[in-house]
Length: 107
Image (cartoon, rainbow, N blue to C red; front, side):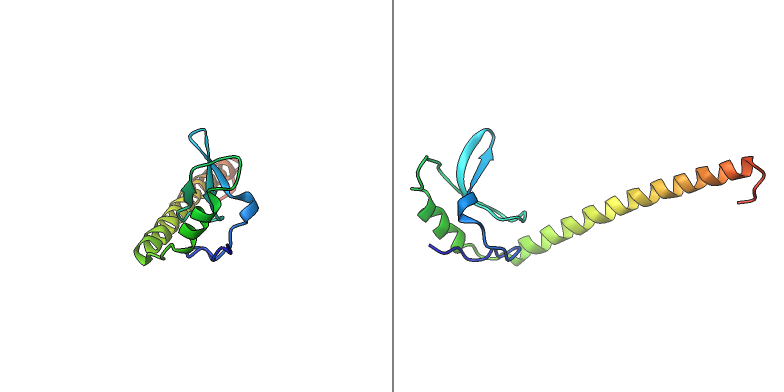
């Protein structure tokens, strides 16, 4: 069965890399590179789980509210990272200015 693109990132999962380790257990899973939901089934040495997982993957519906919330969380996290970096740069700048003043340089 051909897999449809992920409704979150648009990538098509690689059928040869469809498994996932969760809490020490190996699961048959259709997964992609983004943080959207995966589709898990039981795992066995064969590929009996593949048809069920592929069908479930292909019937996922894009929930715009989930996507909006995910994007907002990503942006908020990135903004927080940038604010923290900015605070560090301000502190380092002030430290350098203080050092320059110690050498008699007006900074």
